[in-house]
Every structure is written in C-alpha cells, then in structure tokens.
Image (cartoon, rainbow, N blue to C red; front, side, top):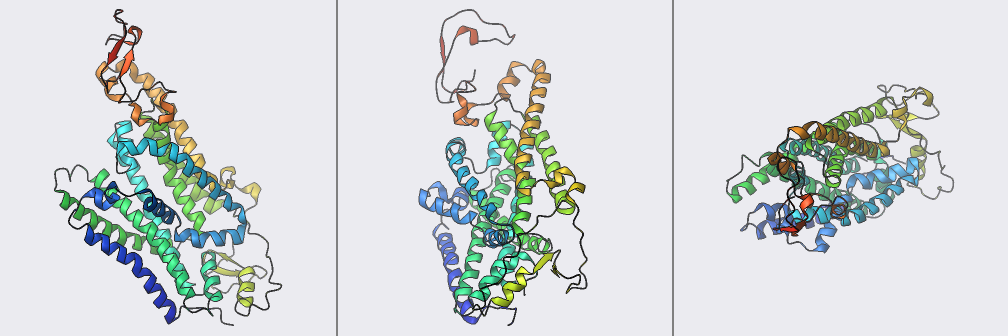
Length: 466
C-alpha cells in the first residue's frame, strides 16, 4: 500500500465552495459599510453586535487549526490528561464574565493596552505591553497558519504534527469530497484566528503606537491606513510561518511556550493593576521585564536541555486487518518516533535520513530542577512572579517617594475606582466615580497632613476624589 495520499479534484472543488462562503461574507460587509468608514465600524463592528454573533466569533476564534491538529496528536502520544486544560478554560470564561467584562466594558476602550495606560498613567507601560502582546500574536498566527499547510503536506509524515491530517486523508480516500471538507475546516479555523489576530494587531498599531502621529487625521484616512497595516501584517505572518516551520516539537507545546513567555508578564501587570490600587508603574515595568527574561530562559532551557516527555506505549494494531487502507500506515506510525525532523525506528540504530543524529536523553537526575517543570506550568509561574515582584517594587517605591510628593502629584497618581475590579472596590474602600462621596472631618486632610477643624459631615460633588 502506498504511504502517500493526496486530494482529488472533487476535494478541491468542495474546499473552494466552502471557502467562498467566508470570503463572500467579508466582501458583503466591506461593500455594506463602505459609506461609513470609521475605526469602530471596521475594528469593532460599530459596537452594535448582539450576543449571538459575538459568542460565535469568540468560539470559532479559539477553535484554531493548531488545536484541531495538535490536540489529536497530543492525546495520541501522551494520553487524555490534556483535556483538563479544557476544564480550566471553561472556568476562565465564567470568571471573565464577572471580572473582566464589568471592568473593561464601561471604559469603552479598544484594547487592554489602553486600560494599562489609564490605570498606571504611564505611556511606557502601555508601549511595553503593546510590543510584547503584538509579538505574541504574530508568533501565534504563524503557528495557526502552519497547521493547514501541514494538512496539505500530509508529503508523507515527517513530524508528529501531521498525524491527524495523515490519518484523515487516508481514512477518507474512498469518500469523495470528505478529505477536502476536512482540509476546509482546518483552513476556516485558521482564517477565524488569523482574521481576529490581524484585526487586533492593526488596532494595537493604530491606537497604541500611532495614536499621536494620527491625531487630527481624518477618520476615513485612519481607516485606510489601518487596512494597509492589516495587509502588511498578513504578509509578515506568511513569512514568519516559513521560519516556525523549521521548529520541531508538538505544535501545542510550541504554542504554549510562546504564550507563557510573552503572555504571562501582561497578565501579571493587568491582574496586579486591577486588583491592588497602590500598584504603580515602577512595579509593573520591573516585574514584567524580569518575568519576560525568566520565562524565555525557562522555555528555551527546557526545550534544549530538559527531559523530554515520554510518549505512551504502543497500543498495537491487532484487529486492524480489515482496515486495508490503514493497517500498514498505522503500524508505521506506532513503531516510529519523530525527533528533530528525522524519522527514526525505535528498535533500530539506523535512520532513513543521512542528516539525522542520534540523541541521548539526559537522566532525570542530571536535569536542572526548573527544566523538569511541565510547560503547562510556565504561564502560571510567570504570572505569579510578575505579581510578586511588581507589588514588592511598588510598595518600596511608594515608601521612598511618599515624602517627596506634594498634594498635586498624589492627586494625579491616585487610582480611580473604575480601574479596579468592581468586586474589590468595597474591599479597598473605593467609591464609584459616579456616586456622591460623603466624608467626615477626620477624613479631610490639608496639604500639610494636618486634620482640619470639625465642620460636620460634608458631601462632595460627583466624580470628586478624596
């Protein structure tokens, strides 16, 4: 039996018909909204989208092609324990409904980086997080685009990331059009993630990097520039995909390493700022900078010198004799391991590639302790490290600078209630900005830190800070 499978003419026809649907939707709305070229219309749908389309958009965005290809391979080689991540993801959605949305939606901002600037009153924090977040999105988009490319090459299996497409293409050879439908699903998953990613990158560039140069420019011109930026990012992602194609390893682990290294500093800054009113820009920048370096060192060190995860034992091919199309290929997949791009027989010292080099796995006792930690814990470790360091630096800098600040500076750097999680405002005794504040004489302090005379209870106007 041939070990190669390819798409037929019918598969290409099915794929083309399915891909015409999202293309048609994009063209329809591009023509429909051509007379109202605004940033909100182009980037956020005019903020008029109802719950159902927003929910479907989020759902399809997170069901990326990298997950559709990476998850089957991950479960096949390492078991179903990865499904616990889905449980945590579902819980995170519920947590976000009661924390992130009540905090960010009333602010009517375009990106989280706008919030960070408002919260820390620092352009440096905003730019730092913008650059880090954009790098994360760029690398992630490259992996997402790589997934359907692997499906089209499934050029004979050359790495484990091609396991699912290889299996499906052979299984559906006798069902005309089904293989094309599967490949279309992968492409649609990639399109949903890439479109959202490019949209986010364009929005970040316009709102966070080019905000000052574009100030005062006509709205139509800004929208046109935004579209050009989106095209440029699309071309850049295609080029970056060729680079990440040279990386070896399970695609889910590579994606997780990217998110852990670049994402956890931003999460740490955000959680720290939205939870603790006295967290300042000095703590945010120092905590995020140290965390970024630490996570890159941890991820690269684990990939290069850490103990590789052992795959599950072979399940054998007994009872598969009736699967004439898959019996030989299944046996081949189960009896081979893919290391550094080389197809290597487990029970043989020879390889089918002259450029392959034998690798010696280090003993667990010889591996640096931090490099033994699972890649799934890197993001949590980085987030906690950022918060701990950030709060420590914030506390120390607040103590050092408190005597040097006059009342105007304290007023400018104070944290407004609307920038703190709503469920924590009572804990920190922060009043809502739209609620009148009534204070007693003992709470009224003049510029010399002396209590004023007793003049009775005073109610300040709305929006007044104490």
